[in-house]
Image 1 (cartoon, rainbow, N blue to C red):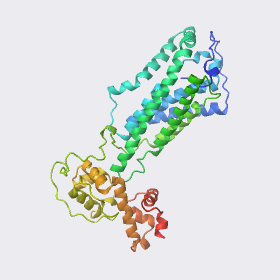
Image 2: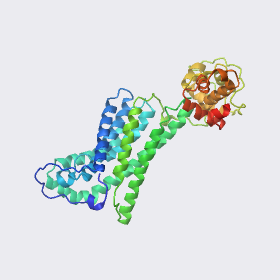
Image 3: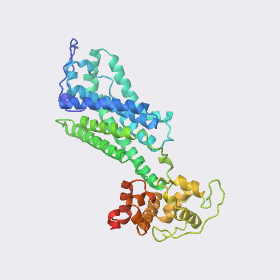
Length: 417
């Protein structure tokens, strides 16, 4: 897919191919940067493809990087004047822009759910790019005069617009789907993990925002061209996608061995609907003895919703307050479920409705309360502030500072005085 100034885009290939000659590539800053970005992307894609962990998301990301890198080759050929020196490079099979959106979406889906499996029914998402690849593959097999005819009679008036506008529509739709999955994933994290600093995927949100900027730039180009007959004096989409590709190459490799998570977007529980039966307090249907409720150290007892089973809430309180499960820095909802014998969905519902908070906030609230309690004891003289935080269930200074200020409104040092 070619973008850019109309005069550059619609330049007429010569009717005859000149004799082969040595390529003269101007080593301008833009040429060097594009070449470096493409080379870095190809290297990173290869490393991701063979990475032993998280194979499915890593391979989706590798294919996304490869498709963008090939698309950037078109920009490289233009700024390096390769097209001008050898028109036979026109219609090289390097355009797979209809794959950008689906690959991004399935990367996000498989990254947040390591149980995700790509099946035949998902192939329909890649129908457009298969048609796109078949078209350029077929054109590459044609003689140069036939390609020239296609350029003048079909591509300029029809297929270029279909390809460009179709790519924008596809990228925008899959971007919105990816953002929806990521938003649901972040809510799910708060309800299932007490420590999320390595699972929040903040870099992925930045990546999606950058893709949104590219999409907005393409939309502006479509509107200006189709409705006002205006063209950019200079097209920045190559540089924007180059920046996206560079970011993906750096942080994608850092996330290649991300901890396995299993978020299913289509199976999110409705926040205000209790499990089928509040009496399902056992893992296998057994009824377990429930301890006496204790006073929560985080705040006054929240009002209990009529749908909340008080006995279940008491068991959760006992596990956190008396048995101090919050001291486990990586405590998860599944681990609390295994310890108490309560079904995970029942715990999640009871925590959300009974405490009025997410699982993450409840557990971190107990940790903050423990830090404040110990700061009022001789431990404050024996241990450093970070030492107390680590013994109270926090696993890093950064996380401790962020959570403590979130709950108290002041930094830990200010609280300590």
